[in-house]
Image (tube, rainbow, N blue to C red; front, side):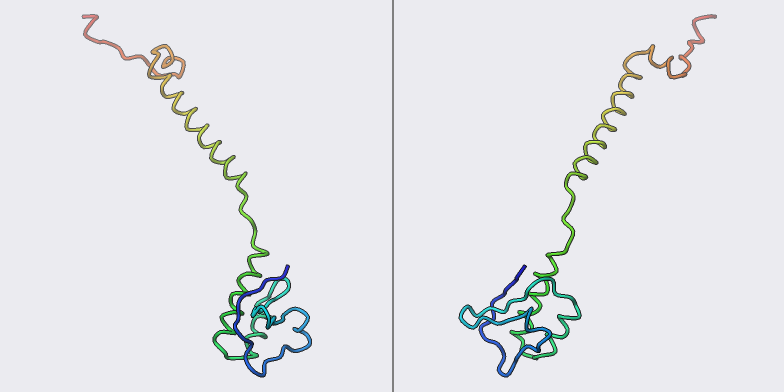
Length: 123
């Protein structure tokens, strides 16, 4: 994939060496600097060393960021939704269990809890 960024003019006297010329080029009609594919940090450093012109270096930084986004992993939204649904289901199950224990006295006995004994009734 080719990425391009605006650059009003290429610094005077700048030419891209043979190993880089097939990946980076300047379009004077459109006034853009373009790079093909993913730009490694090593390649970025090589291109940076060609000129100290601030506009050129800013354009290179933009190209570096654009080409790096190409390989960033995309977030897996499906996994997020599955996780949220599982968490919601667990909260719902816990809430219903607690509600059932407190709502129906018979349910307390099923859990092994001892019923409260009224000690004053037998005297």
